[in-house]
Image: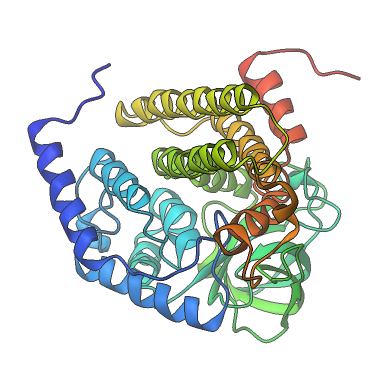
Length: 397
């Protein structure tokens, strides 16, 4: 496989690089993989997404008739990679862009595509994902939120949890049980739910960082038009898999670039620790640890290239994404833990302290990274997917 850009791709990369140099927002704190939730960040990232949209740099591989640019996945990957390279923040409506719209474009009716996709691009409507529940976080198909049919409407009752940006969202990708007697994977439907509907209550959940990035949501007799059913009735499991696979596939190369940035920052912290002797580790141990991190980041890169190559040949995102999920989530935790080791006693100083290293950036990232091996599917579940669906190992009992 030739990983170099063609002449046209190289020209597109340079155009994207120049535009980002002139337009990327400045002064936003590095929050790693966290989503922005404070009022000022929401304002800045909303404006940022709208500028990207106006410049024709969102939905690059989506059909023109739905607001996209009609280009290919390669241009989309190049732009996402360049965004990460210059450390530009993700658009506010990242869940809608990476999961909601791709799922609607694949499974939606013509009316649904025309109704929702353009407003996701322009950030007129923000989206959240209503999948996990208190009793079915790792076993998603065991969800209990129910929807019964009443004429031309579904009536939804139940609870969802760990819903990122639920407090800001206008629309929700909601999984509900519509056939209680069917096998659990076959009685699920996928609804597009207006978050302003009567009967929806959103309550924030406080994290280790002190922020409330995600929420729990309660649905009490919420009425949803049958026209908002995405895909077939009781066939929502296949639609949900499209959402989950796109979540990991669409931004994989950009994720690798972000890890390259983190590694460079960590390497500089390591060099400083060696010069200033801020920790008790021998210089050889520091260098060896950094070398191992470099190897792992490079491994992520070539795995991302392999998965992306499959997509460009007409394939669909598959269970290989579970490998990437385990790699990046556990690597992020180890890298941030090591950053605190390198700081020695100053590791106890957090954001706001005048003596904190990088204004407490690593301390915040360490706390936030605890959620990496839970969100988007726990490491335990991902390893089971790898074992069963990729290695074809027998299920253990």
